[in-house]
Length: 301
Image (cartoon, rainbow, N blue to C red; front, side, top):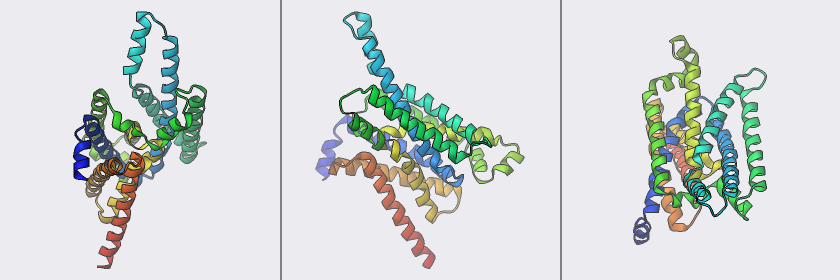
């Protein structure tokens, strides 16, 4: 087993996947505690559906421009090469952030409640995305493309160096935002009314939380797929809450659990040829049940 692991990690692509996977897991765990305590757990799920729709739009744009640029002249070849080098994140990220803003604003509307707004935006984006993939299919295997986007794919093991640096940059931004605005996020999480009374701009920080969550969702798409992202955000936080009570200790424990499960899941998927995303989420579920048992044992003791 160790020889097999050593062989796999001799390839740079596997090391890239591990670096990005651990960073995505760390970022996901940081805001997971806040989302659970504020009862925003399903915002990650809703935004993941929006990200799927945005990914479909990026695919359509990619196919359309390639068809328009198809030719033998130098300009057409240059345009095609630029498209190949352009990451779909350039399209997916802005659309997901806009959806997060709309979701927050619509949820504050008295005519459309938060849960209805979430269902409306997420299901609509999922339906439009699936329709676009079928109409403008990039390959003959439409079902396979949809399945890999929804549940994760091996694309995490084929990351280029530029994609790794982009993921590292976004992860650094997410971590920096959380650390800089830690006190404000803490205040908004536990008592929004009191935070407003003390001069904290609660609406602005709620918007910041939504935007950062959308960035995490886009980062995690290659790792676990659209439908499993919310599990990556929620499970570590729920596990940590079984044993710890303070916000800081829960956040630190959640980060440790998330990184551990991501690393374990990636290694297990390599050794046993299982889907990366499903393996990571399964590891999170196992750890959650272990923490539930530990908390019950400690209470009895």
